[in-house]
Length: 403
Figure 1 (cartoon, rainbow, N blue to C red):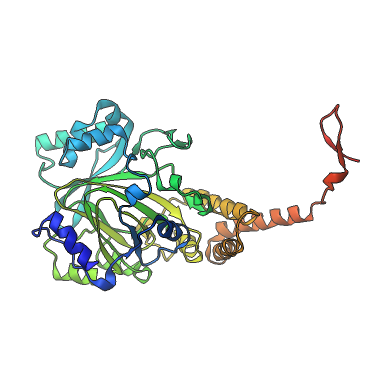
Figure 2: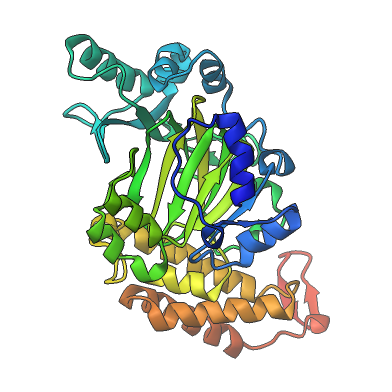
């Protein structure tokens, strides 16, 4: 990893400030799509980051950015320029959150009193603030969770989604259905410039993320599960480690389990259930998107079951109704896959281990879902078996009857 960073520095320039890198904190690198897919589907992703170099090409993600946004990116070197250069139809149909970094180590959202809608409204708010001096045109900006305003048909599957990406990693993995959950509807694109990024946090749900880096370099750090509360309290949720680093920030990075430099073309996977931080570096605009998913792994399911619990930083909790709906989807997926006669014995055992992890570590609602599923299984098992060889069809009624 240290050697790879030196290679990247030649492109970034020797003057580019970076966080300290240590070999023992390097991400895990895999070279083949098969290795990466295996990790995505069956790894726990806990306390690690797994990178597939040139994964954008290997996983056919080159044309995922929507055309209107891609055209604006080609004309822009700053985030505010992207907003200014968006064609009217793209500005009206896309939405996102806008952040500024006008104070070292802190992020603040730029928004109106009411909830922002389209990127057109975001740009109008920013432009007005720049003109009257509310917002400094020179400070770094970051757009997070960029997606469609309304649901549209996904170009690959035809399902109704808000994600703006035209193809996703889940579309190129034939076994993606083995994952108990893969979030499609709300997947977001993130645009940033040097000094912007995602401040220290854990996700609202303790799931995993598949990141896709089309453009730009990104510093990325994750802290171990054991630090899930402490580092967020000590370093402060939302903080971002700008340069020059202070002594305290260096010590916080020493507590991280992975410190990585994500480069253009990388696809990577990590757990959003452990504390993490990202910061853009280099002159080029940063373009990244994330797909949230839950792997078929007992440890990952354990983490999911601890969402909105004492193991989850309170200010990052998910809406209870949304979590209940997600848990329903996971239970349905596991229950459906375990009964699939086409899966191998090892996969079936992992599904059963995941089921037990949810029952043992989940909340009351999670346990009730499995009680209902177990009751359903008993009813199915107790149902009389019909000898289909003894059945005939009444031509008049077209109904099956016993012979």
